[in-house]
Amino acid sequence: MSRRWPAWCLAAAATLAATGTGRAETFVLTTLEWCPYTCSALPGGGASTEVVRSALKAAGHDLEVEFLPWVRAVRAAGHAPRYGGYFPEYAGDVAGFTLSEVIGSGPLGVAEHKERPLAFHSVADLSAYRLGTVRGYLNTAELDAAIAAGRQPVEENVSDASNLLKLALRRIDGTVIDGRVMAYLLDHEPDLRPARPVLRFNPRLLENKTLHVAVAPSEAGRRLAAALKLGLGRIDANAVQSDYLHRIGIDLDGPAAALPVSPPRSKPPP
Image (tube, rainbow, N blue to C red; front, side, top):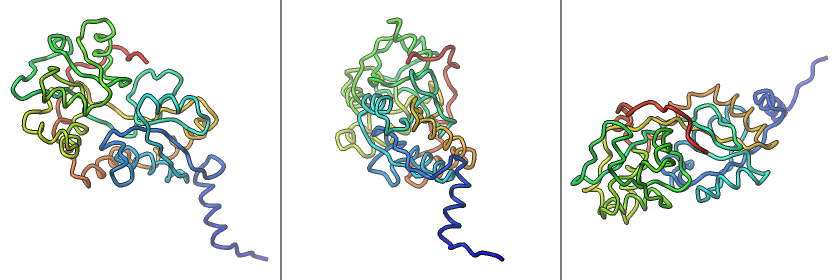
């Protein structure tokens, strides 16, 4: 004798079968305001958020995001058991966390004042300039090593926006920044709009950085890692990012097409 199951029961069974992780759940991750990648003002929370949500949905799960200042976002993800991790993070050694597969990429380079362009052909050449960096951010392995060794003069600030403002006022010579982040800030931050005519992104790219989820060393992190591995295998993360950026009008073919200065020679410090 056959038995007909209710539609809701069949749907639930399909979802659980699709996840491969036992049951559907909502994963909570921390992040920062780093528009256009993670951004509470943008639809869906930004391009990287869109990728992570799509991956988890493909694995039968949901995503909840909490926006915090960057240092707090990293600290909370590593200490509060309700969080599965944080994102986005660059590839490298991230103490206490493991990195997911790639969720996208971003062109990391140097912003400069148009009246005082930076002439450099290698990271070592940048030692002639005082650069702005953001507290808690990884840059490139080579540049971080130069900073740690005292070979690269830097001024550490709390945000990319602060660095761009100081650059416009010529208080620093340049600032390390993602090209798409720079474009977004100059278009959307009222305090920075007057700086648009005088700032530009140097065409020599430091590195095209891959982006990842940093998975916490917890039970929630273990389940998150399994879900992300499954979900990212079912979507094209780079295509999801590109489609999202195209929808919000961020240029995809400008600075991201430049060649890196040199490949990283060692992993950056945590």
